[in-house]
Length: 83
Length: 159
Image (cartoon, rainbow over all chains, first blue to last red; front, side, top):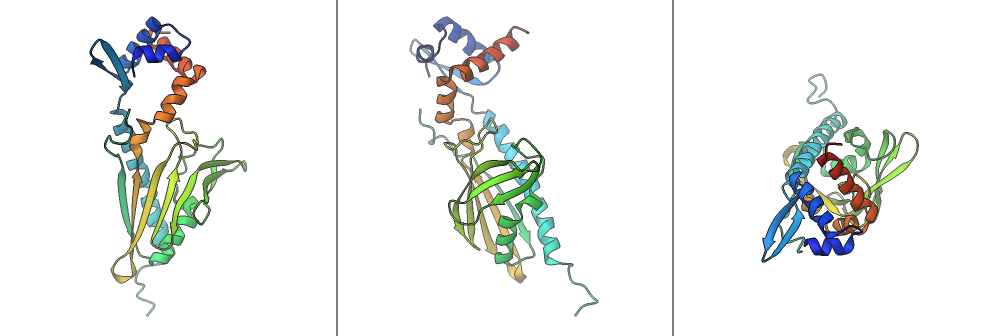
């Protein structure tokens, strides 16, 4: 997305948008590229690795819990006193 | 901007349990409360219950100890005992968003000696980083955008 497009949509001036984008870029939240005379900004995709890691850990924990629950439901394994 | 051609991001996890496929499917869908990591709540109070309403279109939600319900998503596919697909519609701001969808596909397959393998894929996580609707909401909503900018400006200027 170009700076001008953002400025048109926002209740702030174009220089203000540029300044804000520099801050976002500095924080690693947007990535800048140059197309001709225009600077384009997009959301930084590397943040996705954080999202992926989060869900990976989350489901690992949930499925570990599920395995414990399933084992309890299945009853004690191979009880020598029975059968 | 093309949002879906960028590579799909997913996580895959699987587990083998000593139950039949039918029992595993039932346990997964009716006893979510018992295996859900409790700290993962988006409601205003502690989780009392996690509910998956059986059948396609059913709601997936948490009920807090205060009785309040907080929607997480919906059932997209209900095919017992083979498969269930849940739509996880919680955005990056941890709020339910009806326009945001990621997919949790769970497949149950038979293994030897009465065991079942559960394979879970949480798909389309790339939408967290490249969701045009959400970006539009941020850009079109003066409070959202300027609020966000104001916070970054505060940080940048050391306030």
